[in-house]
Length: 253
Image (cartoon, rainbow, N blue to C red; front, side):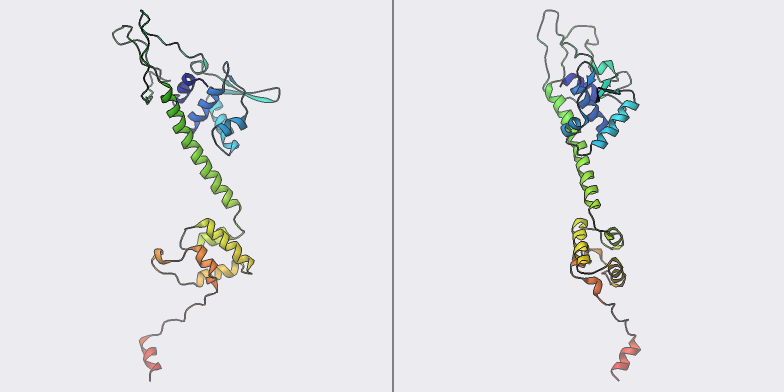
């Protein structure tokens, strides 16, 4: 992968962090302005389990005229439309007497302005001299790519894990969990709900017991939903109504 091209892609304005990451990956895999890497390979490279989400972002990049999606011989191709990105990396320049260029190894944060749409460092000094211009070191490119990749992949994994867990929840659990007065330990509660239904409980009996059960006014002292289900607390009968002072006195007469 070309570090210079990926840095130019990461500095493209108007993109979200995930869009920048996927755009930079396509640019990195491209050869001559065309990326022939499969969608699956791109998703695996980014550690994103949902290929549909990657495809959605690619279509968003195509809508912004950054890439063009084509199909050649049954294989998708992603053609880069911005020549500043897919063109060959610029050659390093130093003094006219061939003084070596000073390369910075300190991570550099690229900021873009309307006059500098791709974050390119000027190649001449303000006074018109030919002083050595520090270029971005490889560490800056790796750090920028890694930070965006980590952010995108972590959110993707968390979203996919949450959706997968909720798809496997037993029927009726969502209604119970919505009504339960303490939202904690949802996966454990779903397992306890499934075990309760195997013991013969129905959603109607559980919900009736939930409405009847008297919870502590302090949420911290309310049982977890999994504990409530494992203890069959929907079977607890409603406590008798409190007696008035006169009624209590009558019992002693």
